[in-house]
Image 1 (cartoon, rainbow, N blue to C red):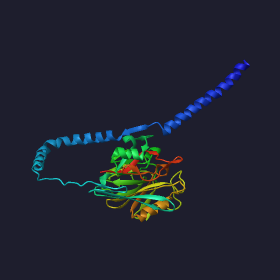
Image 2: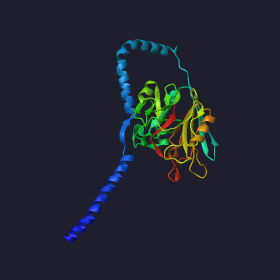
Image 3: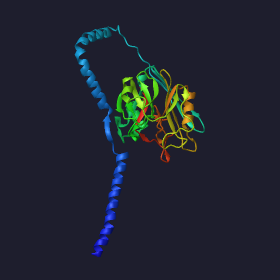
Length: 330
């Protein structure tokens, strides 16, 4: 009897330890690996298009005659189209009839900073892309992969919405998440006309922003420049971040004129920037509005098939997978 009790005494802790380990592994996988709440962006677009088509169906017969008339004019050549010229592309620039991008590099506070100056005729070319074309937790791909799949010319990493379970998320007009991350959470809103605005989630709901014409909402922050003035100081920092970091930012200089900026960091060659230093860079570029996106190992700029900066992930120079990107495409 004594021997049996002794064996049972050793067996129970082993069983308990095994169960605890299994639960811990599952919890980590559930939090960081297993995709959850997945929504396909393409499915949502298809549903929206189908709905719009049904609503428009009643008027399709009336428009048929008008369409035929337009087709006749086109056939005769009276409604000719303008021919577009091919884009001129170099290692650091892209110029077409509708988009101009120039990438430059400068050193700021012992940090390599990469600046993309962007001018567009149509603000709809400023878009957002999702890893695997889907919204959901634990869905991630490298910025370069998402950019290539989207047919981007230029791309930077986004707000890594998948690392959090709250905060407004809208991409290309589709509202994916509307639960607030708190009254003080600062978001970047991009409207249909290309205007950028920094809002506080406590001041307005995601649905109200959608009704105002928002097409993109990013919930990382903070805002760097508002009304041309630096909006952060030396004491400001994002959660769980070091003072100097690789950084990613986006800003608007004027109508149709934007800047995307990334900085290297966490290496001997490039120290990294504080939020205030990043804000000052954006202000010096002439930004009236500028916003801090996810930084650290996520920071990546991709242009015309190549990564521009030196992303630091783990102990090496390599890209980290992220939830989303911001990009330019024609």
